[in-house]
View 1 (cartoon, rainbow, N blue to C red):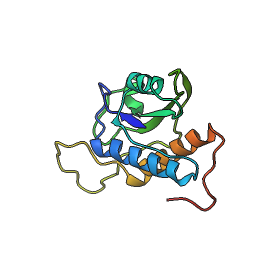
View 2: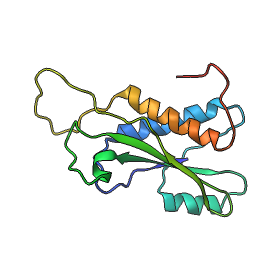
View 3: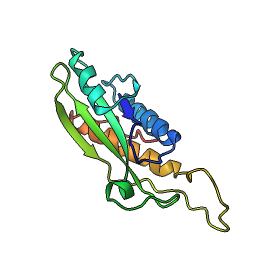
View 4: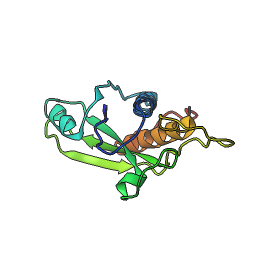
Length: 154
């Protein structure tokens, strides 16, 4: 499993990629029959190549997408929405078998009060990041008819 960090026009902070990857792996490991390893960074084409070298293990590639940038709108700090895309790739053949996008959108934290100028991109809600990752992981598992033990949430 890896996450594509190479989006050209994406101002997504690195901690969002790290949090999504860690949360998806954690959720997949909650399923008793799933064993995951992290490749950290992996583009979809690298995922296809990796899957062709696998005998049994499926490869999953995650992407963090900017809703604003994908729609052609200008992305301003603290105004973007992010979503998590996933692609599941079959071992040996390298064929993409499943893909999807979360329905939970990751919104920036609202700062409220007086806004100070900043060079950094605003922080995103940790809760919404984890919810998007949880939904992506559950949809990946559902594609294999695998469920997580009842009562297992964050």
